[in-house]
Length: 543
Figure 1 (cartoon, rainbow, N blue to C red):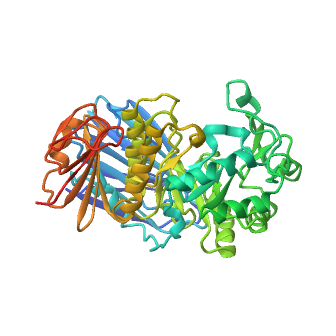
Figure 2: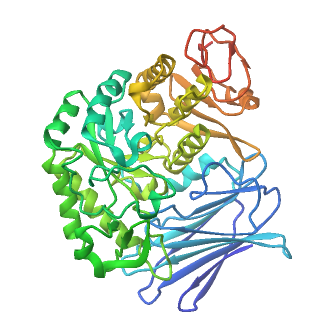
Figure 3: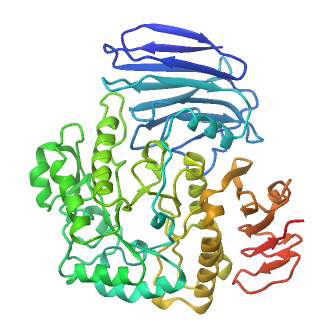
């Protein structure tokens, strides 16, 4: 078995594969525009695959053909084939996490192999990088940790505000957000234990609207100028101060790649946008755009209103493309925006979402949020686990806002809250109309998060898989352990070799027979010791 390296000039190199780790160092030459690396993996004890664009969990099959694009603004170059036991049979990776890359996996039935190919764009700025094939049969968590160790990532300290539980306006009001709603809601949010507010889309235009099949067609037609609506927020500067006086950070949503068709910014950038028109907006062409006006606008927005930060959305809206590379210029744009915001305020908070919650973005974001998962606590759980696989505990990991229908069962409300404990909890409910049971559940798990921040945010996380599904996510440090259990059948494995104080969150449908000294029911009332009901939680003291 060999790894074949082929450059755009036609130059070909071949390297024999070692028994465990094979690493090839590549020195890009100026005349080369791309390089491909490919290897044939025998399909022996291979049952699933994993890559950073796949959420949540593993596939439950081997794909016949699969293509994944990655670059600075989306995903990263790592593709793993796994055994039924969840061990890595082969992981192919690159340490070039900035340039555009296309990953292709294709089955060769004749040879009983899977061919993995990375095609990577080479630019004058491209630095030497390596290609690695990992055949060590380690866990996926360990394989990704080994890969990240090759990236020479900086040691970063994030602002304390990045670890505060978040209240977000998006799901609950969409584009109907206004000053009165925020000021009625935030005192309740603060009382429940939340320390950060995100005012999402809707603050920068006068129209009131909710997302629906009808409105989504032109939803973003008025965004792009990033001016506060005086109709919805008539005293915005004073309003921000009032929320901050409660002890809450104040963030606004922005999407700098989007120029709505009614925006004045589109006039300045019309010749620097891509031709695609969708949902009322055009996309910025990062390869041609002079971004100074836009960057200045976002920095001025944050400074003028003394904001604590921005939720920066849709940085991945233009996918990496090896044929027309854009990832490195997108990275420079992100660097310019976020570097400017951080220069203005070293404690600024910057939220990035899942597809760019990657090692390349660790210097620029301060919190990395799971992709959209309203109503679906299991999806939120899985996506949080994916971000933990992506970046480990190297940066603050945030849940997507929990959102459920009025009248939801208490055990499912509890599951929403417990599932989010893989990271920093976030909520988007109408807090004014919560039931007492809902308030008790929310308060209980936000208090748990606040009491165990060190474990959740800085502990070592591991993942148990069962039949390609996420069975459990486990965090531990020197003194304590948190087990968030999705599959009741995995309890014994999740508790194996534990000699620490352990908290168990039961997302499963099974009643767990377990030696707890304290148990809470699904509605967060004291329960019977020795069992944890579905949607409940319990504490097992160290022996």
